[in-house]
Amino acid sequence: MSRNTSIQNGGWVIIFSKIEHNSYKWYQSLRWKLFISYFLISLIPLLAFSYIMSDALLNYFMEVNEKELLYQANKVAGSIKKIGYLNDEKNRAIFDYELDEKSKEENYRILVLDSKGIVLSDTNKTETGKTFLVPEVMVALDGKDEANLRVNERAIYASAYIENENSEKIGAVLLISSFNEFYELIDDLGEKWLILTIGISLAVSVIVFLTSQIITVPLKNILSIIRKITAGQLFQRIELKGHNEFTELGEAVNTMTERLEQVESSRQEFVSNVSHELKTPLSSIKVLSDSILLQEDMPTEMYKEFLQDINSEIDRMTNIINDLLSLVKLDHTEAGLNIAQTDVNELVKDVVKRLYPLADQKQIEIIYESNKDIVIDADEMKLSLAVSNLIENAIKYTPNGGVVTVGVDADHQNAFISVQDTGIGISEEEQSKIFNRFYRVDKTRDRKTGGTGLGLAITHSTVMLHNGSIKVVSKENEGALFIVRLPIKYSKQ
Ligand code: ADP
Image (cartoon, rainbow, N blue to C red; front, side, top):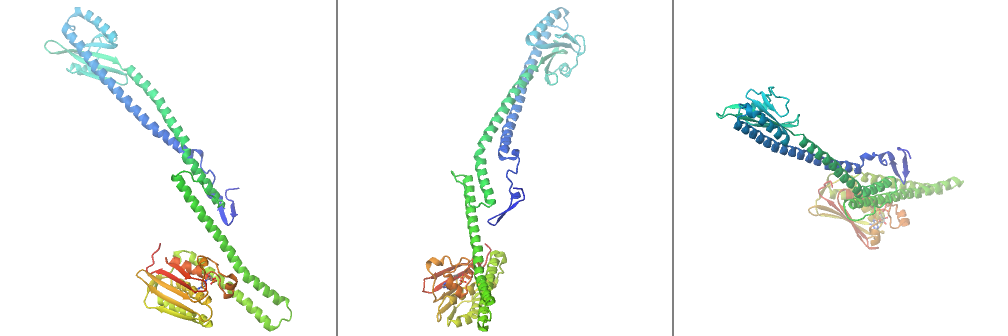
């Protein structure tokens, strides 16, 4: 089925483009997002830890080596002072030999410089006789010791000054030790740590990827059910297992589908009721008009009688359509209410006055009882129709000569309108159904009374829109009492 195909399924028009199957790419899925998130969440701290650790390790090695080299430089400087190396040419060769041995043994280069920075001895033999005024030497000739790591050379330079008996600075010792092996050690450690880090992050992400099924499977189930509902297959239920957020979501979806089913079935029932109700008068009209057409030389009397019947069937259809229109208006929620201060006594009295002639036809007495002035927030037009329906019913379902009593009363918060008759009453079983649309206790008899079965539905909807309630007290053949409660102050719910 193409993207924009709309299908009509039990009245549910669905545009498929709204919910596309797998409308996202695989990498946009929740599982992949979890995978990537967990990969980064475990990778970044481990990498940061690795960086901090290698830096701390490097600093530690550097400090230890610098201290050790400084100590050795001072030791060499001390020996030079002791044996008078700088002045005594004789001892110099022996001492140079000793320095060579020490350099090989300790694995560092030793340079001895005079006060001008000229190299007197170099265990590497490359700088002898040359000026070697590196910063560490200059600092030493100034009478201080210093050790530095030269990062680009990966070497530590440590210097110490040499003094004579008069404490004059007559030269300097410079030791140069390679730091390369520590760098290599840390690089090696870093490499291993990186492999371990990626391994751990991947393992965590794979576990999360696999366990994320716990989330994605119920989500996919719920999604597929919702898709079916959207496609018009309303009668769906999600299987509920255990108790967690997903079962709660499933419960909510199940409740929603139940509600949809109710709405759908009441809609279907309503449509079939409307069709049925309109079909009956139409069939009568058809039969009557056929008779007129087929029967030649029909007496005028009969002709008139048939036309009167047709006329009353048309009236009946008009009544049904008017009632339906009233109901549709009430369905348009509270927004359609025209709330204003309404005098309940005035309203009820007006309705009673209008219905006197109807009651008179059946010699029914209407008694009106009220001893309070009551003003409420209400939509006067709609409330008049609701009250009128109740009093009309009371007259309709009360035999000739009966009594209809209409009362108005109030407490601090509510107004009450009651309509009591001495008519045929309503059995307990029927009482819960009479507010349904098109419901009539006795269809054939009620047809004669001209009822549409919509009057009480209109009254009920109106009262509900005013945040009120309606109740019926009755027994068969013992009359009926309808009580409407309406809040004095209207507030939107
Ligand atoms: P209708 O147009 O048929 O009167 P309503 O919705 O007003 O439709 O009422 C529904 C049914 O409830 C009526 O058909 C009737 O059987 C019953 N009913 C309503 N009011 C009364 C009453 N006062 N006494 C007895 N039955 C009543």
